[in-house]
Structure formats: C-alpha cells, structure tokens
Image (cartoon, rainbow, N blue to C red; front, side, top):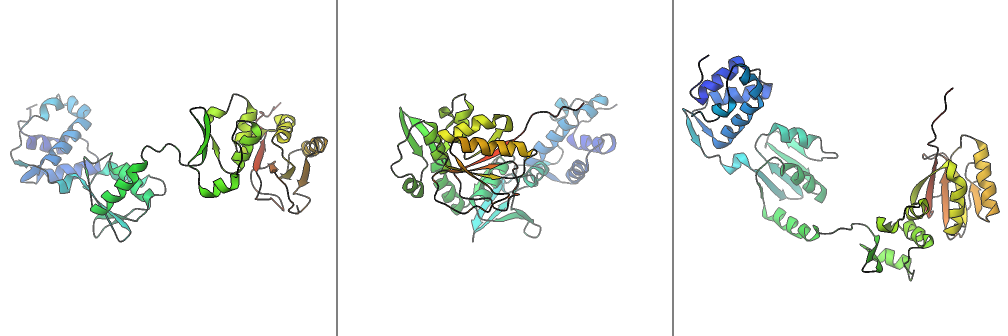
Length: 332
C-alpha cells in the first residue's frame, strides 16, 4: 500500500481502515474538517495513533513514523482555557470548568459520595462547598489536567489547609515520644473527662483510654490478643476464646456485662453467665430483662449477634464485644 505523506492522509486512512470507538471516531471526523488545529489536538491524535498501533501494524504502518508526518493545516498553540482546569469558589458553591476528557469524566463519576453535578447550560461542574468536595475535585482533576487555575478564594483556603499537610494524627491517639506517653490530637472535652489519669501501657489503662475514643498506637500492641482486646472499644472475639476473654474482663475491672443477641446454643450463653458469676462480675441478659441503669464504673456489652436484637441494648458502655464463630462447618 502507499504510505501516507501527511497527517490528513492518515486521518482519511483511519476512517476507512481502523476500527475506532464511537468517541474516537467523532474526534477524527471533527479534526478532519478543521482548517487549523491546536497543539492539544495534536497530542490527543498522537495518543490515538498509539492506541490503535496494533491495527496500523496489520497494514504495515508504523505509528512511530506516522506521528512525525506534517500537517497541511496550521498548528497553533492551545489556549490554557482549553487545556487546563479552572476552579472557582463563590457563594459557597464550587465551580469547575475543564476541557473534555472522557477518562476524567468516567473516573470522576466513580468517586464515592461525589456531590458534583454537571451543568449542561453553563458547561461546568457544581457542588455545595465543603472541604471534602474540594478534596474530591482536586484529587481527581490533578491526575488528568496539566494545571488547575484557582481563584483567590480557593487559593486562600488551600493555603490554610496546607498547614496541616504534615499532620500525622487526626484523632486522639496514645503515642510514645522520646520515652514519654502523650495523647496527641486531643481536645478539651477529652482532657476534662480523663482528668488526672496516669498514662501507662497496662491493659487497664489501655481499656479506659479506648473507652473514651482514644486510639492506641500500634507500637503499644504486643503480639498478644489481650492487648488488642484491651485497646479496641469495639472488638471481636471468637466463641472458642470465651473463657480467656472473661479473665480479661476481670483484668480491665469490668463490673457489669450486658448480654445481648441470640446465641446458636443456649449452653454457651449459660456457660458465660456462670463464669461471670464465679469471677464476681454482674451481668444482665437483655433478651429477658430490661436492664435498669445503675452506677457502674466499666460496663461492657457482649453481643452474640452484631445486629441489634435485644429489647434493651445499652448505648453507654465502655466496650462492645462481638462474639463470632469462625470455625468451619463440618459437613459429612
């Protein structure tokens, strides 16, 4: 076959011999009718040539040579208006204009809880202002556009937020700094609630901190299941470890247990009650008794089911334990 000498000849060849996607075909048809093209359109065409490289090779055409062919029409520098994104925040609304990019559109639509909508009239994206929406937009747009032009308001907001880029902790966390224990990212309410609690790594202290919503840094958790159990406000325990867990409840000074949810076998439930009684830990079966609020120092809820089934399931507890059975079923 005769090799093309210009890009326009390549475009003509593609329309007749290359199987194009619907969007790519529209682009080729559009470019073929122009009397001048932008550098941005040139780059996009080169991308398409490599995209269909395998089909070109079947016709003994090499894409590496095709991209160097000259244009017969004028090539002009693309305006930033058509190559870059434009972000504006006004009256608590985020506006974003950008050149058409199918990959960006598909990716942007898939972002969970994306509040942006496409305004067909003004041809731009809109969303009520929130820091999350701003993050969603910039995290997506930065991947697809060479530059994002920002208004003065957005520049100011991003400048303020940049002060927190190096922040490591976003919730109250127990950490060890130079041999000293601290709760970083704390707040006045937490400080007031903890009072003069002495910080240490005992499981009693870890359990108390977890009950107040303090995250225990992983460096404090040794290989034992006990430390993991104490360090989590909501934790999961295998039914086979029930006896061991009850001794842990005693160690963290639990003084009452609310038992909720139905168990597969009542014997497990009754065994739990007996063991709690032996260790002097009060209990209340919320399936049969409406618990009366009392003054307890460290109440714990043990659930035989994760979903709520009990007539009374207390909300103000220091720890929630979900009992699970991960043992495989033996089918004979």
